Amino acid sequence: MTQSGRSILKIGRSCDSPGYGMIIRKRRHTLMHVNFKNSSLLILAITAVVCSRIMFAFFHDPEGPNLLVVTGMAAVIYLVSSAVYLSNIYPSLTGFKRSSATIFIQILVATGFYLGLR
Image (cartoon, rainbow, N blue to C red):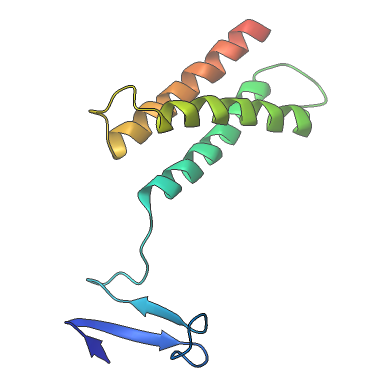
């Protein structure tokens, strides 16, 4: 089925009723639309956990890092980085540059916490 030059694949129950079914539109070989802002925040959350885990791995603790402490530090790092990412301090940074700068800020925050706690 085509509609205005785009092919539409209908999945689900009765697609005539609102709330039923799902429409997946194909646009130049992509099957779903990914919002860059949401995916960037997800990437920031993952890198916050990684930075926190690496930071606590550098401490020479025979028992290893505590999961609660790593999660708490990841939350702090994520909150700082998401505040910087969502603010409009540097409007010239957009897209990939903004995400890269925020990941760099996460690394700086984790390094600062490591040096402060050491």
